[in-house]
Image 1 (cartoon, rainbow, N blue to C red):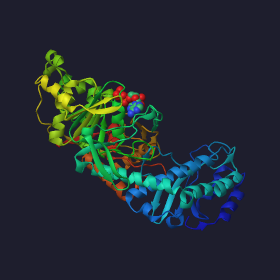
Image 2: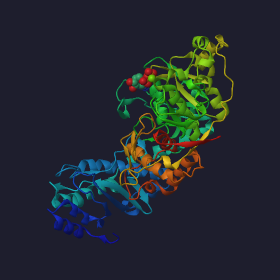
Image 3: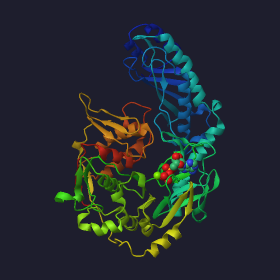
Length: 573
Ligand code: ADP
Ligand code: MG
């Protein structure tokens, strides 16, 4: 494996195995020097219908001609690799075609979306850029078609590599914009807190998306670019772009109101995604949110394992203890309460809630209902009676989209009204109304209180299936196969890339090693994330793979919490 062979050796091997059984492709395993890059064949697929063979190419950073300032900091390296992944992907798509049975002829790396993410498909390792990709080795029926293979290895692959990894063939302008925008967005997120902000939405940002299933920006003359209300406009300075203005959302409780179809959910969704950096041209490049923001929603049917939901729900029928609440089939309100408590358990400074995906009885209980149903028959303390304590006692801010209940005026620090996609600051008007109706809502001034932490029991996570000790994978954007279980992540809305989902599946396995029967879930997550931070995403697999992308500990916890076999013991928090 260590001997680097030349182009002629590769050609000779291919010619020798031509026409023979597919298994003979295994002879290709090894390293080849192909001019300006080195190819490593790590794993050969067993048949033409199996997932493509795993390979890597590496190019010396110096040889690539990419100027050192493009990789002189962590965030620049992330942006550079993300850019190269996009170019390599484009080249691979152009050169892929059906060249026989099954996957014959395909060259692939995962398609990057609108976010600039750290990905395992393109990494800088020491003095080299390394790209991990797969290739469907060509076959006629089940016999090796070496002539097609020769063309793929010796013509197509070099063209892709030349076109995507060498500076002379890249657009210097696009590369430097990619890096500058990413660096600016990262900087912006970093200074939010020191300006007392939890989120920032730049003037001129384009928030709406092309469609419900397409994450690219909406185009055309009906797009209304974002404009901050003057009273909320802040001016900040970015390292590359210089001065920028936009709406600063301060800590505390912010309400987004307005009529139906006026852009409330679109604004909140952009804020949710503001935990990520976006590619130039996305429209949300400078919409940034504090890193630990969590979208909270109702998710009936999910499993809940011994979560302390007592701050929101007490006295449920049959006297069940809600400080240690478990169910295989949560209701709208209990799932929303659990989603909040689980986010607090891992650590968050900002909750994002949309009426469209909330349980009404969790959000509000109005005067008349309070009068008809005294507290002792209503197990729920609605969010409206907790949202201030969350901020006052735990420092957790909330941004809430709510068109239907003015009672929230009483508890909001700021009220933004969307009118035809334009935000207006209506705080004063809302407060006037709130005062005029004065004292209507008996304010619950109890403190949020502590809540119980949970210690995961490692036996409850079993990644094995059949003869395999570890059988886990992400399936698309919101499903994980973990041993004999399937985890549904379709309500974990801040997972944006299938490679994140796949990485989370493997990180779950890593996290088991930190479950010692004493460490709370939060500690387990922290240690797992620290390990990945130190060693890189490669720690998640035995052989190098291009199938991972960075993710947060919050989403890792979300996946563990939704594993139906997951069990914990509680401790006092
Ligand atoms: P709401 O939550 O207030 O009911 P949505 O955010 O769902 O409204 O937006 C309604 C529609 O308007 C969506 O189709 C969305 O894509 C579109 N939209 C949102 N913001 C804008 C904008 N700034 N410019 C143009 N269209 C927009
Ligand atoms: Mg909406």
